Image (tube, rainbow, N blue to C red; front, side, top):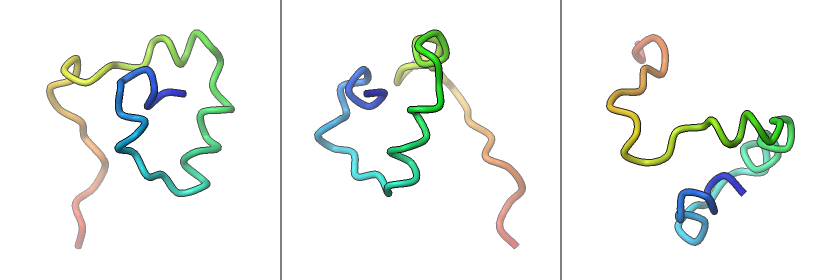
Length: 49
């Protein structure tokens, strides 16, 4: 559903855990997720050691 909104559904291969997580989000939370091109930088946490 989220990847469909971005137009990437056909190119996305997600593990089952990632496919299930969006079901926990409300419709408002899903609508507020940024689309491609709306985010300049994503910080994913500490670097690999």
